[in-house]
Length: 255
Image (cartoon, rainbow, N blue to C red; front, side, top):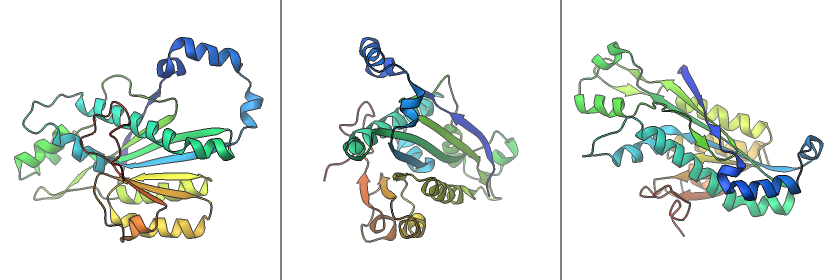
């Protein structure tokens, strides 16, 4: 299985940064911190599992013909994670409020990036392909801010065969394993962001083995509804490649 060469932990925004300091102070005053109360609360638990390659490809397409900024990938991933978390919050909060005291959420991303090893770079036979992988390195420029929830991004080593063929050996296995981990931990909802139909059998089995877990699939591709990846899930949402990622209004296609 591909090695994870680094894990990037995102820094949660404070409540004041999200809704404003005055509004946050009012909430804090009305709800003084009490760990006993929180421990006794029931939360609708949402796990967001992201196939990093699937969201990275639309990002890179935005820079075709333009000068690529070294911090661009950082900013796009930061904006995308905040946007998908915000969308999940608004889409599923009514369920959380109906049967629970609130909604808890965490995001786990997996991707494979070209290492800094010059020997790997020399294996590429196509300069354009090499530049594409060099541009897509996930370089962290300062803190990566998300909503007030946990998020991590696992960067795996991209393997390069002789002849310049790059492959993400083991990344799919890690994502599939994470699906089972989240289901086994008792997640109420798993949101899988991918276009890879190979995850269909894993979803089918989880739905059979864990009766209470719901699974939704989000994808930039207009997937075949009859294929197992979509047909075995509880819901499918197609994301908009041209979304500005400033809010959730254009994040998901309607209908």
